[in-house]
Length: 213
Image 1 (cartoon, rainbow, N blue to C red):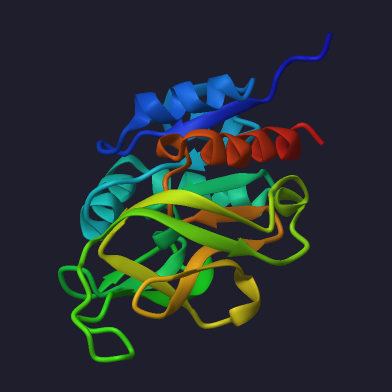
Image 2: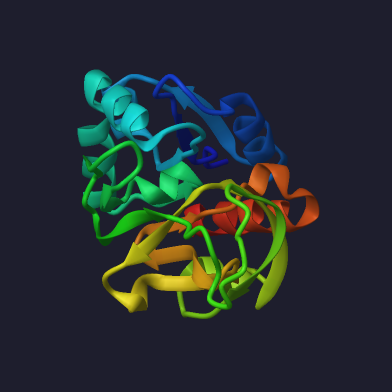
């Protein structure tokens, strides 16, 4: 019997790691919290969850050498799933708490939601709660996901990709924004699958199917 793929859940000193691991295990994956760069490089796939501030996450990843290990794993073609901050960190920079460089694996920026929506009405920030995501694209993850579903969000900042083709899921909150991005072996979402009940499990089931191919 072939072994189950090993999924490294990146530990950079913050985040709801145990709930992410448990959610991945419910989808049949061998998921382990990993804080060592060499162990991360040996994993078959990488999940980068995230809560907290962008700059703090970058600092902790860099201090542990995990930023380079994540980038090398992606460059080697291993599947990557980013959750919330794990999506934002893929981009070139964030304006949260001043200009902070990200991993730069995708072109674009992370920007705060505006104070008002397109109609001039006050917009509550952070964006907290359930919202619909509409998917479109040909990434392997999307083969096992519905065209739209409702997921749980908690965030004050959104990604603004420079290349619109990487956006494979959109949500409306004060206007349309990128809620899911993908390119090759990258797939990342702004929402929290581990908090999104049945809809979130479908995302992690799709990830499990992807890493087993």
